[in-house]
Image (cartoon, rainbow, N blue to C red; front, side, top):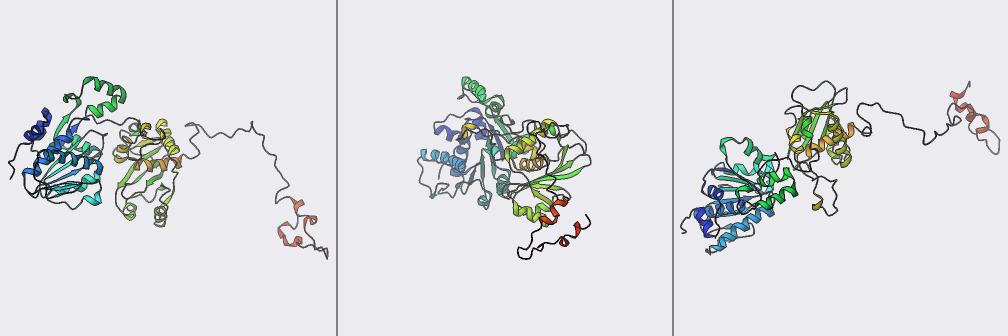
Length: 452
């Protein structure tokens, strides 16, 4: 039987001198903890020691490790097991690449970031969510109930990633149920001022504040950096034509937006529907049937089903660059309005949807946004690209001009090639039988020509 040791003492036995904030975390017993940490703060090391001590010193303890990818949760598992090896303890009862079970019945499990494979764990004593700001909300919703009966601890640690997701919501609006500990770079003695100044210059002010100052920022390289200005302060949409856009999804969200196109061509967004892993019948019940819908052309079968159910829906335009340009044109012209609290998921995605870093792409292309956080925005793109089809080259507020004919003269008309040309129906144009000489197609076959 191992003699229980405080987590701070375990860290020192590993020849790791804890920072003051690490001592605060290791000594805390709060059931729900948020660690808002800068890069390279040592947050993974800290929670790995917490998980190891919980499993070694308390019988039948179950520790679950979760991150935004299986590779990252497995990396945290490897860090934890490297500490265990340094204690030269007896071999575990069972060990795989993703799970270890000790002689006292305690288990540590590294989980994949997939809802369909992480359900079913019970009596969880400690749930550690690494890179929590990047873990999808549905995954958090799947693992959080595992603590309901066991009343286990939840520790979520992350560097911020925009103003979205459960980590940001818990930090900003979670109330007194959470213990919050913020660790900016200035609290880390191992990170020098000269390095931080170089990072400020290279990353830019906004990205630097997010990565090293624990600030929840809008990401650099946003596709729609000024989207928030289209939200109106108050009021209601005027009368007009009801229109909407749909982006189909199942594991990815099904996203639908709708609103009113007024007489001045201004699009007022008045509602949205945003849900995962629901059948099409569920979504159809929540969409206004009177709207004219434009949907993801890749969902041909879904479009057909909605049409059969009485919806006026057709395929939208999925040309990415053209659609982004159409949305941007409305943002710049002020012809896109969003009513307050009407489209929360759309606004959340607009703060995250960004262009890919060309350094991360082999072709160096800067025109392709990151394919995530874009489902409601895709529905908006389908809608606007169809509403503004053949209009994007025109200046706002100006009527359509006739095409110029100076460069190429108009082709002369051919008045003889017409059904009103009697000459075409004279007898000499009708074929005759070569033997009898009689008309093969007598004029009587064309009664509408009689009397001309």
